[in-house]
Image (cartoon, rainbow, N blue to C red; front, top):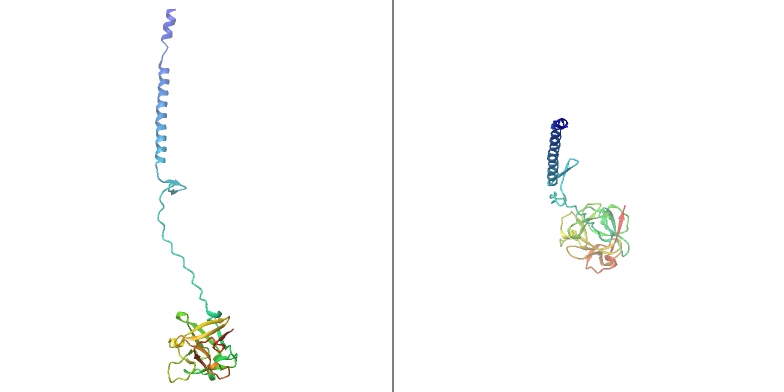
Length: 228
C-alpha cells in the first residue's frame, strides 16, 4: 500500500501550471485590446467633424459660415403709359374734332417758320406727325416731311399761329397732351400753357392753327389717327 501512494504523489504537475499561465495571458491580452477599442470609440465621439463619403460634415448646431453676398435682383423697369393710347413709334394725323380737317404744313414747306393750318386730309408727309417724349412728361411734335418741330414762335415779328422750326430744346417746342377721351387730346404749349386750335374756332381749309386760352372746346381737341 505505501508504494502505490508514493507513485501517485510522484505524477508531474507542470502541465497544470502551463494551462493556468495560458489562461492568465489570454485574460491580460483581452483586457488590453478591449481598452484600446474603448479608447478609440471615446476619441471618435469627441471629434468635431466626421468624414461622410470623403467630405467633412459639420455636426448639428455648428455656426454657419457667412455666404458671399448675393447681388440684388434687378427691378423691372416701369412701363411708361402715354396719354390717349399714344405710341411714340407711330406716325399720326392730327384731326381737329370740330370740322374734321387735319393739321397741315402749308404748301408742304420744310422751311423754318413755315406756317401750319387746317386742310382736307390726304396723308402726305406734311400731314404726318411724330410725338417724341422729353423730360417732365412733355412731347416734341415733329413733322415727318421736314424733321422740324411744331412750336409757338417767340419772335414778336413772326406770323401768328404755330410754325415749324429746327429743334432748340426750348419750352415753346414742348407740348403736354391732355387726354379728353380715347384717342383724343388737347395740345397745351409748355411755355404759354395755351391750347392749339383752329384759329377762332374756324373749321375751314386754310384756317391757321394757333394758340388760345384753354377752354376745352371742340375746336381745341385733336383726334390722334395712327398711320401704319
